[in-house]
Length: 388
Image (cartoon, rainbow, N blue to C red; front, side, top):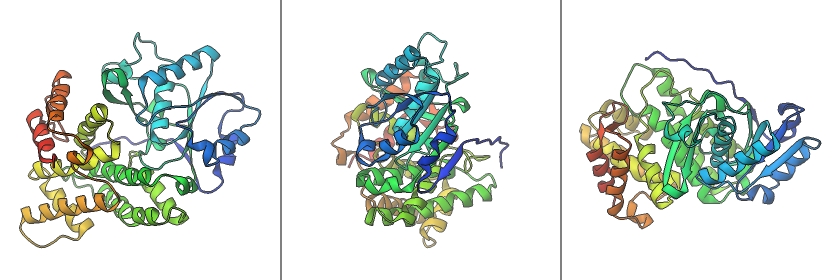
């Protein structure tokens, strides 16, 4: 196992009725910017619960944060924070709203000349401070409620970039599984596969003698495989919704990635598909991952075989036959929860391949993945294999 440091201070309030605890979680004298998305919280009652819990607090509201939050929109929220001298961000929504809140919190105190540098120059200019954040999660998927990661889209340039910082870790996150009851089914499907691939990116690399992390990761995968379809079949199944929600949180709170190599190439390529074509994030992961698994079968051979045996019970055949069967079962799972896995399923053709490769090249990227050896030519090969 590799050396690591692990610290996650996020307080989780999990279960029915936990929104009522907000007055004890938000500082009493806080001037709050309440941020949310397209208004679903008005329909499902979450907005009213939050506002009732925070009666007497100084609250300004900012709605309309998009799926794949837009930099241009978030900067308007930053101006609101500065204008009213707000000092606390409360995000009520799914991963996009939470990611947007993290950028707002960092950009509000950014001392550089261009807040886009928070993302574009994340390693050269790391975030040094941010406003405190609390969250009320309404969509299990990204794990943003218990990590310091954020992904933001710049609409005018069709770029989608990420940053991470311990300064934007939420102080608390409220997780009430009942929010799942009113979600559109496609949001649940995307959440299932997003969490699944989060685990894969930290698990499907190469062995470093880390049985605890491997078993934790496998338990999350198995839970998503077992509980995800139950939620899709009956969204008001509270126990299934609770297990799904907690699995999505555990998939990306840092625990299973401690001391092990991590990949993230599938996410990096997938982000470009979203940036250029607006394909849902979860859908892009299901397009890219099977091609990456096949191309990198030698690098990932030991973990692919372990994944196939422990998760899909694949034990018969040659090494290549077992890997092929493992990839096929993974695709079958994605499709069983309602996610298509080919570029042609989304009306995207070969022309996107050169655009994505050129985008990586323009950033000086030579290789990605856990070994840094997934080349630009191989990115093109992966996408070519996923055309139809």
